[in-house]
Image 1 (cartoon, rainbow, N blue to C red):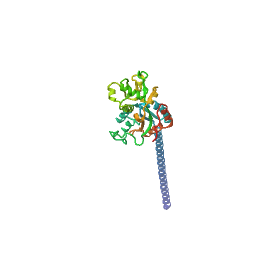
Image 2: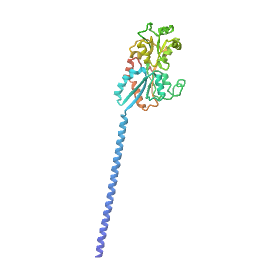
Image 3: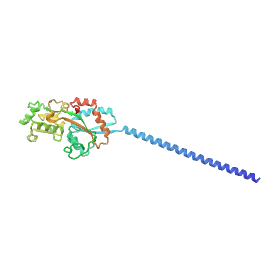
Image 4: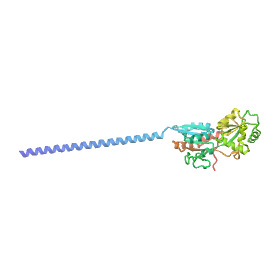
Length: 307
């Protein structure tokens, strides 16, 4: 009898023990499964966040700051409307002025993503690959391999309607300056159009300092100011670009030859300190497309001849 009781008790104890083990095993399996599910959910959340971040970067709103010579005001303003359709997430902010002034602003730390100069000198002064005799300060502000000669312009003579002196050619201008009978409008020495005018004066053997001292020259801080002087008749004639003559409704009476002042080439480059180098390069590439070139050519610009 005792043996039967002991057997029953032992069997019951073993059954309880097995049940407890089974319950413990089941709980452990449930917790493991729950942990795996949580980890999977966390991974999915991270992937979703990553996808969201990529989407934000691709559609990021970019404010691109473009410093450009004053003679590009009308054309770039028109082109900006085309680019808005091409890249709606890119806002173009323009700073138009003389290339010398723009170069100084960039050098002093002004935010600039893309620089388009009306002369090689101003770009060379910031380009580490340029001749040290031009880049005298050893500046390295131009992004390597981004620089390109994008446009060519023409230097022209425009005569004011108010002038009482008959002028048609640069020869006429030079003769009248020697006689001291006219007032010439020209750009300052740090402005490309002013530098081209200086070369023209040298070509004719005229002394700029003497002319200025004798009141024969009226200076403008950029080509737009010189153009205004001609339009308003405050000077007898002015040396400007054919593109500015077109924009102001003036007639170019004569065109300067390369022998007089060389070619008028506009270089463009992405700035090394730009936060949006890729976006700046994309806009520079866009400026070289046929639709943009047609806008440039309408006012007198032309593509730079290769070779």
